[in-house]
Amino acid sequence: MRNDNRVEEHSGLSATVKMPHDIVMEIISRWPLKFVVQCKLLSKNFKGRISHPEFSKTLFQRQKVTLHNSSI
Image (cartoon, rainbow, N blue to C red; front, side):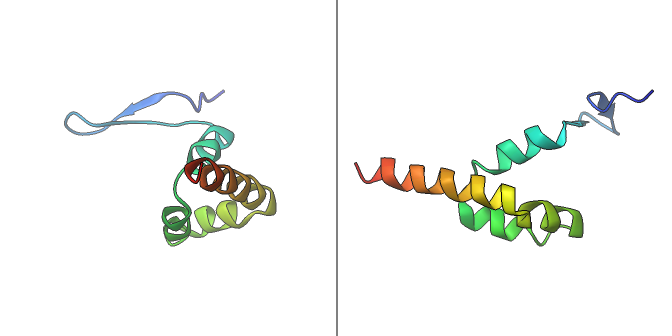
């Protein structure tokens, strides 16, 4: 059985951590809208995930809250 939360070492000092999809999408949903839209260009997989209606709903709700709080 494979553990998707492991750290993979690469050459040099860098390492990547594989995180569950829902955590990655939670993080991305907190980014500025302009940056999220630009991320759709990274891959078909990213484009599909970012374009998913449920993610869009979450993203726009967060953006609305952010805009509301910044205008107070």
